[in-house]
Length: 196
Image (cartoon, rainbow, N blue to C red; front, side):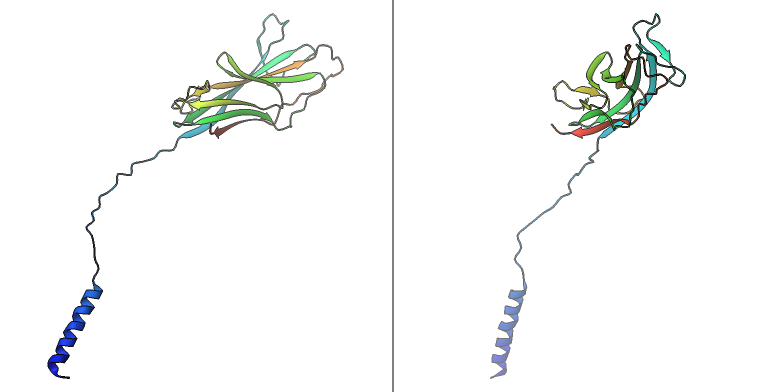
């Protein structure tokens, strides 16, 4: 083969290699995306001070403040303990159940009954005997739903949004339970998000 022919073949092979090694690209462009900041909401509950009162119907000064450490119950007495709860819900779609439950650690002698109310201001939201959980639906003030749920604030502020009023009564006809004690323990309030 002549040098000229060899050169032509080498040239064609070089062009073929160059053509095979290139890529075909269409135009493109890019720009930055403003991602923004996503802020999580808040769900919180804090127990506040508890007060106890003798609310027996035959007391001239009813309701009367009492100290459970020194006060003694007799047949026919009724007392009420009020525990305030500061609740915070912050989120556009935030709905939660507030539930009071008894873990079974409470002990009551015969003739003593316990009932409780969940209260907001002067409105009783739920009533049940001890040991029966009552769900109370709450919603953030940011939530646009108008379903009759109880609205609460966005942050804990040390002011009770809700109260649990525990009513303890000693049956007037029960004369046998001398120096017995009633123990209310294992009560818990749970705030849990729900989706509706």
